[in-house]
Length: 205
Image 1: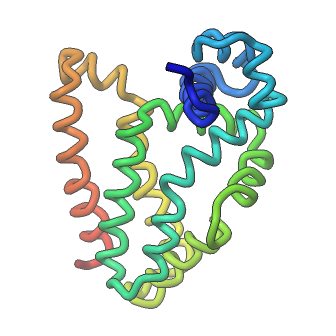
Image 2: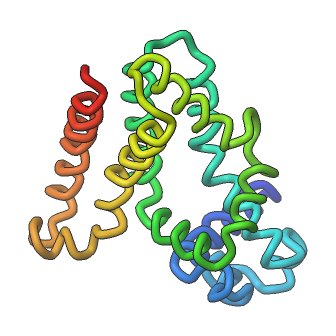
Image 3: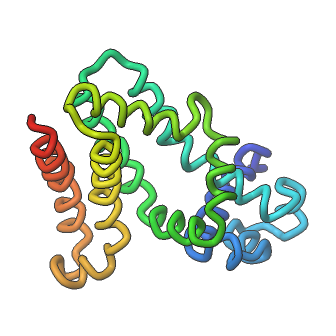
């Protein structure tokens, strides 16, 4: 059966995501992506003219799984507690679906933070990403009587508590879970509730 253009493009994107997540923009090579996708390099260039364009497509495809949902969440009439709870659920699920994402993001932020912010602003529909977090922070200040600094610390605490187990996954699995993926996944499921309890406690709930 002949593969359609969309199927070929999706196969390229999946291969590129694996290579970019492993090696970052600087370390990835178009030939390696073509090999991963099982196609020749000429065909890869037919679909994506440059490594930068392919990188942007991967970045947009990955993060549009997350930010539009958060954008909708901030616009909803749900309580702040419900919004933060859902935010944690969405974020943990993104990381479970893309366990290599945190190291990829850390690597690229250190390489060129301005470029990453520009990619976010250009490719994410809805609000500016900073607006989303400012809205969360403003609601915390209003409803929980926090200062601006305290609200920012709270948001960063949420993100850090979600992300660290995935950044430290190889070491954590070695130290505490005997390299058992099922036990680690169970730990992550439990961690969602632990993060919520910790954050809600600091907010007086």
